[in-house]
Image (tube, one colour):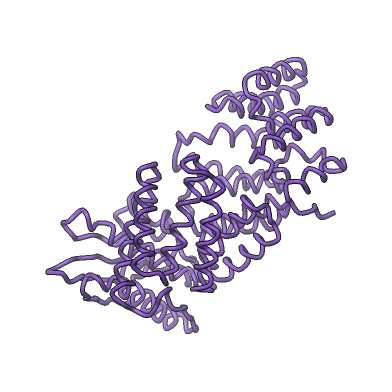
Length: 461
């Protein structure tokens, strides 16, 4: 049986003919999910998985069964003579019967108030259904004003552009977030959204890293000052603290706060899981990976993270199930050959790993994993030749070269390439603890020296 305290918010249907306002329905859906993710004990399906499942199934009973939820929230958005009309209904997943429904009518500029009202109405109904007490914190900038409403609509448009991910879309999102901040300086979500876009642009090489990251951190500090319970601000700050500042203790504190504020957020859980793996805390990383995958069962990235964490915890059966689910959802997923190769190496099938990694598009991954598989097969000369090919063609793959040499039992060569990665500022060094191929080096003092240099916490004994 599904958990009685489980819910999927399906994409609100846009009945607005004007395509320029189509972002409103998606934005309201996402904001309602973000609000409900504050509730402890609620199993809330993520935005991405709800959208994917709804696109596949017209029958809501099938959809509820696939997502393993007891309740569905559905809705529609209309615009008539300047008035925004939002209908929302809470349904039983097993038969689609209506538990509660309501229609909200506001002027267009009051969209901010509507999402807050719907979220609170759903919480009240869940509390009544389950005979429990739930509390939903006030939304950011809860003092409703014309400027807040305009800023909210700009943020919805910015998030819509941000999801596209192209260079032009990111620039559009940045402009819209900046405009939202100018319209309403006290609206924390505009600051968080802008910080997110700035760090993405820096990572993709679309802007200079240092000024972009510094501005993003300043924006997040201001957002947290304005709204101390903004989970997204803490989660993003944690990412920057360990990726940009290499401050793992601060990042852990920020992530812990984000999870406490938004326990039903799959994105926060998945990010925390990857961070914990980098910190060397693999049992906790696996636990959060499970929660994230339960909340976001249709996400390839979430399932991939789960597979990797399960392999690192020596749980190949669970990793196999996650990889098989990825194949079911997206048979041509580009990451599958690498994941399959990792799994076969873990279970002692280097021959199958070699066949899978041959399909990997990225040469540095294909060559480094091939060298490891060839070594495990006893084809040591061929393994060395493969590694030399990688060295000759891509010295930027220093971290992967070090992994291969560690697996081949050549510790000095491995440390030489880790030093090269250190000099080059290779971001792969953040995976020192999460890589299973470097475990043989853990007892060597040189390994701890490198880990300390890049700011990683000391491994627990």
